[in-house]
Amino acid sequence: MASTFQKQPSLYSSFRVQCRVLGALLVREMLTRYGRHNIGFLWLFVEPMIFTLGVTALWTATKSVHGSDLPIVAFALTGYSSVLLWRNMPGRCIGALWSNLSLMYHRNIKVLDIYLARLILEFGGATISFATLSLLFISIGWLEPPQDIMKVVAGWLVIAWFGSALAIALGALSHESELVDKLWHPASYLIFPLSGSAFMVDALPKAAQDIVLYIPMVHGVEMVREGYFGNRAHAHYDLGYVIPFSLVLSFVALMIVRWVAARVVPE
Amino acid sequence: MIRLTDVRKVYHTRFGSNLVLDGVGFELHMGERLGVLGRNGAGKSTMVRLISGAERPTSGRIERTMSVSWPLAFGGAFQYMLTGVDNVRFISRVYDQDFHRNLAFVEDFSELGAYLREPVRTYSSGMRARLAFAISMIIEFDCFLIDEVGAVGDERFHARCNHELFGKRGDRAMVIISHDAAYIRDNCNRFAVLHGGKLVLYDDFEIAYADFKELIGWKPPPGWPNVEVPTA
Image 1 (cartoon, rainbow over the protein chains, first blue to last red):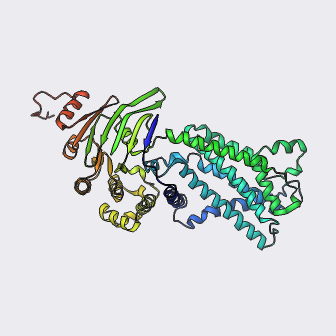
Image 2 (cartoon, each protein chain N blue to C red; image 1 turned 45 degrees about the vertical axis):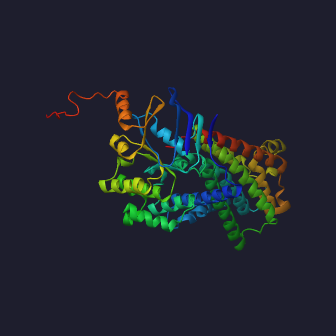
Image 3 (cartoon, rainbow over the protein chains, first blue to last red; image 1 turned 180 degrees about the vertical axis):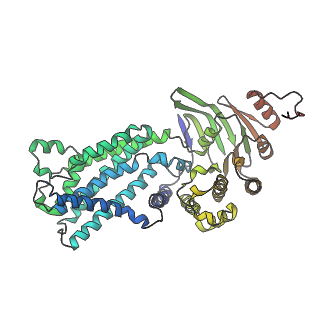
């Protein structure tokens, strides 16, 4: 058995090290990604905002069919913001270890920290973008304030949890196989139309509903929409499915990270 | 103390598995400076990475009761998009050190001036080495791992490095890898030769060096060491 022996620090001091390392990684990530030029780290949420605004404009212009009487602006905002959340998290974590291999020389920094730092950034960016656009649309009257804001938050967190677990699993796997990177791009595009962002589950035939509800992020998006529109959304979701799913996926993701961390070779 | 017990490291490559370290073991205490000789690809840097904890052995134990540095003068630990100052800030935060005190030291030692505020990718290799070494010195480790510190930089830089390492930090433990045998002879008090996955330890440099030369098949030219340089 390979083992590396060291004194066991207390839980509290480990927690402090963890916070410090994540903080340092966050700043580092922000600086390398956005630099100090023009608006700097504001790009963190300006970029997803531009995305969401563009899609909202497109869907409004083409009067996209979404199978409900919900206003198209609100529909696009809730839908596309959710896509950004679950799609960008794996996108940022895939290959993250390769570009940060040299950090493995600092024993306080673990493989998981690299993924966590990127996930926190991605979650922050998508959340600020969603919140800012919501406030903007509400203030100019394009959007009613959400009926149940806690449900919006809960749905959002469900998507984020699933997205993070998926991101860590794919990110760690991508260190062992380039296939993950190659396949994720087509996969994310193919899942997008199925992810519940561009339709309401209620508008689908019963047979299609049953299939679509196997896709975890659909539940989160439906929840966000129920929070926003209340009963008008006729949301279909089952926390009894999506929470165990995310829990198992998180567990698998951590196992993969552990496996990869034992094999990692710094440059 | 650092103790390696029967450490093995296998890399899986396209042409099968490659046994790089085959049962390496030694103990290193404070004040001991172990110089490791070995030809290119012998596994010296792999051994250093294992001691640093950046990588794990395939089997065997590595025990550390003292803090161990990353491989010194190693530029890879930096983010090239960031400035020198950003890198100092990052390391200071990760190791919970006072940033301003560290920055003052790095400014003084690296002599990079205004370049410290430019991205590291604009630096020459000598400038990178100066920054890397300076940053390595801001954390007070018990054991320093030194992988070819003399490869880049000018005389002044080498002299200053030697003063920081062997003058100010002569009481620490060190593992030093170099292809410059004289550097190892002058600065180490224990010696080792790594060859074919095995590490053989010596107390005497001359014996270690003689064995090493024999292992790598170095034959002295006739009349050595008084050889006439052939002229064209």
